[in-house]
Amino acid sequence: MLNRVYFYTSSIEKYLQARFLFDRHGLTVDYSRTNTDPYDEDYSGTTEQLLAQAIAQVADQVGIGRLVFVEDTSVRIDALSEGNSDFPGMRVKHWFSETSFAACDKALVDAGGDRRATVNSDIALKIPRLGRPVFVHGETTGIIASAPPDFLASTQYPWLTPDTFNGWFIPDGTDLPLGALPIEDSLRFDFRVKAFEALIDRLEEYAFALNLPPTAYRRRRPLPPISSRQASLFSVGHDGELGPAIAVVGRTCAGKTTFAEYASGRHRLRHIEASTIVRSLPVASHTADDADGFTFAMRALDELGHDVVVNTLIEQYGDQLLEGFVVSGLRDILEIHKIREMIPGIKVVLIEASERTRYERHVKRARTCAKSSLKDFRSMDRSQDAFGFLTVAEDLSDVLIHNEGKLEEYHRQIDAIVMDRRHIGGVDFDLQPRAQLDQHQLYRCLRILQELDRPLQCDEIEAESIQGGGSRIRHNNANKVLRRVPVLARRFDPPSSHGVEDVDRVRYAITGSGVAYIALMDARRSGPQSGNGGSHA
Image 1 (cartoon, rainbow, N blue to C red):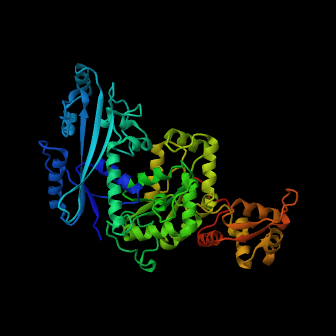
Image 2 (image 1 turned 30 degrees about the vertical axis):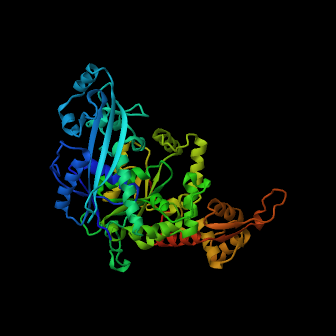
């Protein structure tokens, strides 16, 4: 088995960017902290020669048995370069620290006004027992801006800043400096992202060639048995043995990824994206219907089992989860049931925002694959509803965030949840089902279907509801609540009668997701019940 992979750099911003990309692929990268340059920078040769010398020095420091990589950035400003001699080339870091924007602008004007530039990112990877390093490359062409940067650095993504060449450099295909781009747009143009992606592809090739999962180059042990672990992973926090365990759920553009990425960067929680795991599953080849991702995910769960994502997550990360993690992208009730079984202390955090707010964020992000119309956006919501969890999320979540404010406010809410500090607006820390279980019509209908273990007509459900002194669930209401969440109960319609629905003859049978819903609701019975789910802060 291969060891962990290290990024050896003195730049925390570079490391955070690398971890951001690795996390998105469900992979792990570690950081060796150093306050000085980790290797000698000899600019007398080529970039590959510099990196080869650097990786040899670094390998001696971290150990020859470890996977380690280094990265070097170089720039070619066409007007100031001569032939094959790039300016400032590999010396860009020192040149930038000694040059003002005004001085650079004057030099370009004096040289004829050509503002074209190319930024290169080169990586050398040291593989144990391989005598030579492996090189990967990324580059972006563009122009140097005509005015100095007038934007603020990103607090969440510190590599997006006006304080590096990213503040001066406008990539081809956009009108903004690289450092000013929204995070999703920056991924399309960032030279270092291109190199990191090439490195990740290479690591995955090696892992698959060895018939190992994509994260096998990081040594991990299985999770210890549940009985030997503390009862709550979430409550231990930073001073205990275990870290927070959080599953963040919500609709498109509610803020799930922002929550996970901020918690990862600020609180050092491992970010695991469920959709990345889904894409890595051994499912039959994609079809045209898989273009939106939802169809492929549903097909993967149907083929491999609805607990496959959680099982894969546990298998890949093992005891690394005990350090604290946040998983985003779970949307199936059976997934939530499975992860609660495997990690009893996990907290499910539901993020809510109005449709208007979410749609505005969707348009602002301007993802290349984004659909722009409100109709298509609502269609995406319906696709997510088909997995079942989001339609009953308030019943099954522990914490609710109302994410309608500014990003800084949202960050404070995330801090409060991770640190378990409960006095903050917009967060309900003790979310409960909207009704007590003996009054909860959906729960009671499913319980009746489970106990009788056969398809029932709605009038049969009504009759059973009053057995033992329970309150009556009228057959029209039974049909209404069960029809709203089809993943929990399969509906059997009678033959059509001139297009008129015959509610009296409709039958329902509980599904595996319905059984999981009952189990999750029963597990919440031990906590304090509230008729309205408690007061939302």
